[in-house]
Image (cartoon, rainbow, N blue to C red; front, top):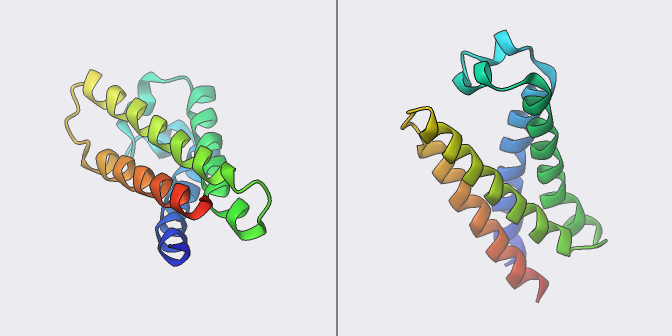
Length: 121
């Protein structure tokens, strides 16, 4: 189970490090081609979402690697599931039905959480 968790959590963490990192660094104009929803959201909120994504990615990987507070990996996975639930709601409210990536991320984060619970027990 440790290997499965490491692979799934590592890939998910890479995705969120990239996605969150660009939300923190890039301007609204540079984000809009990839993320149409940023035009209606205040930039401090976009930056906060980016920080949460980066922290979630770190939380998936660092606690299991160090052995310090490994329960944080489960908390990070749950947080990323909740983040995707919110993302899906934002997309659907805007009339954007392209939510396949969000659903895939939600399922992957849920799988990571399940793997974390089996790894913790």
